[in-house]
Amino acid sequence: MPEIFANYINGEWVTRPATFEDRNPASTDEVVAVFVKGSAQDIEDAAAAASAALSAWSNLSGPARGNILYKTAEILDRRFEQVSAEMTREEGKTLPEARGEVRRSINIFRYFAGEGARLPGMLVPSERDRVHMFTIRRPIGVVGLITPWNFPSAIPAWKLAPALICGNTVVLKPASAAPLSAWRIVEALHEAGVPKGVVNFVAGPGAELGDALVSAKPMKAVSFTGSCQIGNWLHEQASKRRLRIQLEMGGKNPTIVLADADFDSAVENVVNGAFFSTGQKCTATSRAIVEDAIYDRFVAALVERTKRLKVGDGMRPGIDIGPCVDQAQMEVVLKYIDIGRKESGEPKTGGRRLTDGALAKGYFVEPTIFSDVKEEHTIAREEIFGPVLAVMRAKDFEDTVRIANNVPFGLCSSIQTTNVSRVFEYVHRAEVGLLTVNLPSAGVEYQLPFGGTKDSSFGPKEQGPAALDFYSDYKTVYLRY
Ligand code: NAP
Image 1 (cartoon, rainbow, N blue to C red):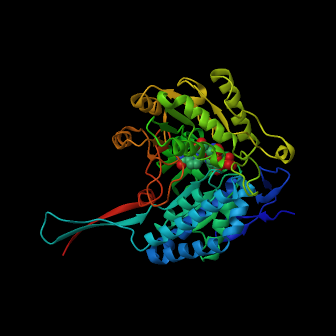
Image 2: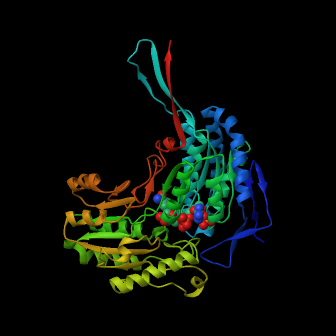
Image 3: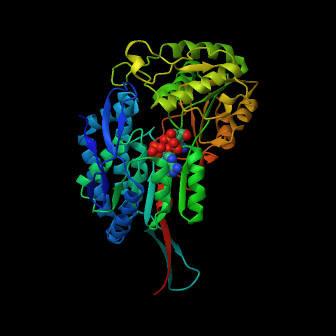
């Protein structure tokens, strides 16, 4: 019998009769965990508990809050293998990928624990004699955190840790497709001694809980990562209540490949960016924009490399690509492959659901490459969020930049070139929040700001020192002595 995981409200593990299953997308007859299905009332209770806990938590010293985050990191580190394997079983990414993500969550907790001893303010000279001017950071209050399934540990970590170190109290609503990884963080916070009410966790259906969360009276801010559709809706609701809001949403990330690129490494970087984690990273490459001079040779090499990728259960050694997270996501991917066939022709490789042997029990889709995709084609414009790459031909550098920027999204981008002038020119002209050079588009670290521009994002950036700007307010002090 799979274990039943309760919600965490006001320091108590709260159960209810209604539950939902967390299934393994690589083998759908395996129930990884059963979760208590939270209700709007649970969100209200959680927000009230967070409100009651706020004063004591925010008045604790920063280093004291940091100590709880350090302990949380240590507890997660002790359970590293267990938590990583659970992530593979609930989300489908390969075990090495899951280990990388759990390591990142641990590092995020350590990084923001350290911020507790800094929480930098400003100290500037006054124009007046004997006046001292400075700022201190104050928390914003109760914060709602809504997270997606694709980084089920790292995204909750990169919202929880800065929110808590700044002295806020939180209500976390994880994605229903993969709630266990976030639950493990909350369990670790509980064991690390976080005071009751400071952290609350309510799993359950997004539409019901999301509405309750954004409407809960004590709520002062919401940080959301997920689709544009839900993010835009939340933005409207939050604006009505003047909640502070941070949205990280979809993308249509390009990788530009110039003719002077290191050819083999560019092939590796595009394949890695497009297909690892089953293309389900917000920073995944979904368009490869390749200069005409090397286009045909590059497509041939991409196809040859992609055909060697091994698709299967991410718990097995040697597997490169796991399943789509659930049936709905797989159907979205297959729908876009159909659209691609109609608009751009037969894919150069892939294009099918895989159902041979044990694969039939999971949501596996072949890594798929369409070539000569035009800018107006649907698969060059809309987010797919799966293992599908649109390769596009560009006349020259100018053309690659124009095509790359010609979408409403602006999360991230990548350029492959050995020409340093082009690198800097692209750094300035890319309409994105982050970009990589001669690396895969995906693979960011926690020490620098993360987030996009245009329709991909709204509000201050996450991670690194920038995260403090969302989770705290300046109080400015003028003092005559
Ligand atoms: P999603 O469907 O928007 O769900 C995200 C979260 O919102 C889940 O917890 C979901 O709960 C919840 N939710 C659903 N309906 C809601 C509502 N009406 N009000 C409030 N919350 C609601 O996104 P997803 O499918 O989990 O994730 C994939 C998307 O996330 C992609 O578009 C991807 O690009 C984006 N993403 C962006 C970034 C970034 O940093 N820019 C990072 C990762 C992912 P349920 O699970 O219960 O439905």
